[in-house]
Length: 123
Image (cartoon, rainbow, N blue to C red; front, side):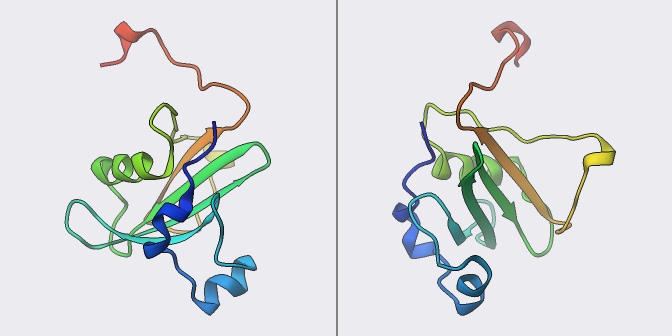
């Protein structure tokens, strides 16, 4: 599977000269920068979606705080297909890189399934 066709969210796509200058284009069906209203308070969620090197990746940020669970779930449902799993990673501190204090990420490997614990362990 692959990420949803992101052209479905073109009304939210950032086509500004800054985005085109940074990424070389405004994106396509697999990538781009988007500004969507939060389902919680209507404030802007900035989403950067990319696909490459074996991974689909979506970052979600707000100007005033980190996105919360309902906001991340909202974006996961829009940027990944219904049958796909995506994950947030908590890497070792030596691997942690933060370029935005209010940003969280969703990842999905393109060529393998994300392992899950037994169903009875997931509450």
